[in-house]
Structure formats: C-alpha cells, structure tokens
Length: 255
Image 1 (tube, rainbow, N blue to C red):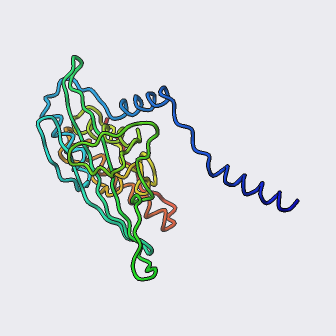
Image 2 (image 1 turned 90 degrees about the vertical axis):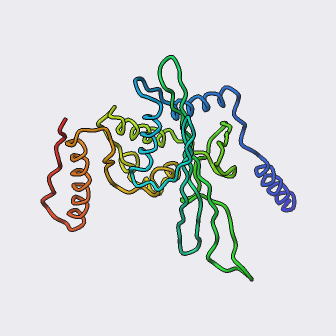
Image 3 (image 1 turned 45 degrees about the horizontal axis):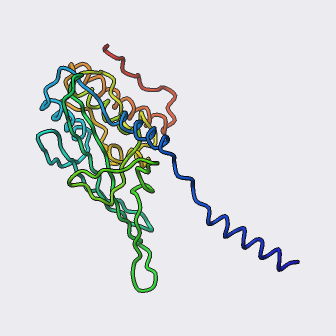
C-alpha cells in the first residue's frame, strides 16, 4: 500500500511539473498588442518634426538620464550603460530608447520603445571560479504577454522590451512638459514611491537625478515652483526623520 502511495505521489509531482501555462488566444494577444501600442504612441498637432524630436531627446536627457543619442531623420536611438554592485553579485547592462516620428492626417505621430539588457556575475566563489547568470538590474524588466518584439537597429537582441504603460505615460508627460503642453510635471516617485527598484520603470527611473529641466518651454515661475517643490520634499523628509513637529511650508502653484 505504501509503495502504491509513493508511486502516486511521484506521478502527481511529475504530472504537475509537466503542466504549462496556457498560451494566450489570438484575441488576447491582439488586445495586449493594441494596449501597448496605445501606451507608446502619441499624436501631436502644430509642431515641426525637428522640434518634437529635440524635445523628446531633452525629455530623456534633462532629468539626469545619461543617454547617448544616435540620430536619424525621423527620430533617434538612445543608449546608456549602467552597473550595480551588491554583496553577492554585480550587474552591468544597458538601457535603450527608440523613438520614431511619422506624419498622419491628424498630425505628427510619435512612437517610442524602451529596452533593458543585463548580465549579472556572482561575487561568491564556487569551486575554481565565479558563476554568472542573466537577470535584470532589479530582478528583471519588461516581461510582456503575447506581444512580439521588434528590435530596432542598435538595440541588443537579448534585451527585454519594457511593456509598462506607466513608463510611457511618464515619458510622454515629460515630453508634454518640454513642449509646454502641460504644467503638470511627474517625477518617478509620483508614479511609484519605490520607482528606483521597480524594473518596469528602469529605463527612466533607475538612474534618475531629481532636477527640473531648464530647457522646458515653461514660464520661469513654473520652473521655479518645481525647484521649490523638490526642495520642500527634501526638507520634509529631513524634518520627518528628525522628528520635528513643525513641517516646512509647501510651495503654492502659480497657476
């Protein structure tokens, strides 16, 4: 009886292990594809192509993002290298942004894509050497379901494509701010308080420096407001950590 029970348990374990996740249907794949296309695409009216491309590059570089750009007539590919070190492992890799523009009856269409590639190496010696393994800067990035990946020229084919709508919403908010279309500027912490450790936001937030873009097409009082807001946030955290009972005064919007 015991032997039969053991055999049944083993059979169950192998049967469970053999199960795979069901593949998405064509309808589900197309829904995911359209959702991603909507997230990474915007249409702008009344702007010259060169102005939009320049503003998009500034939307990346003006927030402390150390990207190097390879430009083409309709857009650019941006690339930056990074590394991180922990007690048990070290990781190095690259982030990529790809942007292209095209004309339509409704205006100038902007499409963007973001990718991350990484390689991690163990800092713990096993046997005669060091082990290595692949992984994201913060545990992986950009895992999508049922959506194919087209790699633009210059992007590592082993990179993971970011498929987070929040990442593209943040990028286009910054682009809108640079163009003067909105005064509402979002920082990574506005999207996620732990944005720097959120793999979905890596291409914008992992190396973000908190600063206000001077190149933005905004009135001086708007730029000053965000500078004051960042200073206020810093003072508030410091006073909170010190246990102060009187909090610093929050700046008031000039609009």
